[in-house]
Length: 456
Image (cartoon, rainbow, N blue to C red; front, side, top):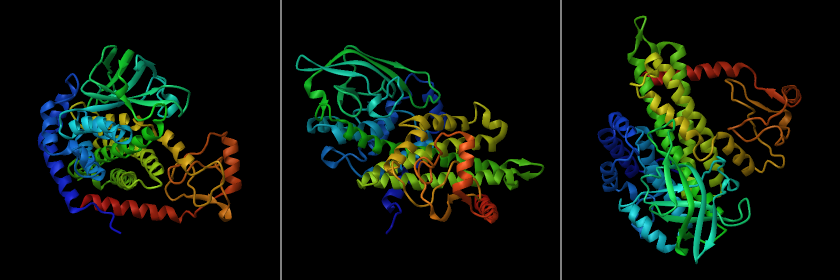
């Protein structure tokens, strides 16, 4: 089985990279950051002309290509820190429309997006900052044959430049029951958008208030009260898309840091020959490649509607959230003092990493989803990593002992549940053993090999 991208997708990657290097270099990114909404209509028209705004949209609505094609472009967009509503439109709103929209809504809105004539976003999170169904408190009540929205949405991406907004609202009950989706066009009476001053100004976030906003009956997406399953699937699409963008940024940080380590001299030698720098670069490579593998599998699982699509998307986000932040931070360290300056671009990637880390749920939230997907209410077997992965140390149950959910949270991307330190030490002493320390020598050899690869 061939898991590689097709030749056409690799051509798409090269063309996207060349286009963004020309049309969206760091100078343009900084200029858009200083603008009112970080949106350039001319740039949007150009990417629409390339067909990017049609990627992943079904052909019957004017789309071309597949979700995997969109993943390729999003990875390159993240590499260039492309500002504007591309992710909000293609990664958030389009999946929600595909999963929950009515046929007239899909034909109208998806067709306009595919043609490059419209931008859209998803309004989901609220002041509670929760990414599950219980976080939806904005109410939608029947009024005059339609609906009336009241409440606040917080951290809505690129709301100011959006022509359409998919809004999650509560129409009854609590939890997953009673969630409905509404398609809001333009800025109707009673709706106000206030841009927020956030860490990452390459992507604009807004507070959106709905004060008695009246919508007609046709604005409802799908059946009332039953939208959570469709919204959850849309968020899985969005999670894989965001991970692709994050991995593109991490790769750019790695390449920039490696080039700097080869050319920056100290004591008459390139700093990359020193172990403290070369091993840090090797760790950055491992994090980037591991995150890329998890992201590509999540994208395939979502696109193929695989049974483990929820697990795959959460595993990818849990890992990539930590990996991108760590790679971006280490990139600043490799650059030393210049990496901390405003004039250098490294801080822009770190800010994007921190913002993306919590978007669509942070690593802790997705680890909990992974634990639920693994049915951690009962015992489960196989190798378990406990706590943070340490070089040369892997812990496992003695004699294949079963480890319960109270002991570990999930495979690979793990954390230990909160317990007292004495209790944790006691459990480890009784239940866990370590692989012999010769693993440490193997880890050192791996670091040396990766460092040589980076220096070639």
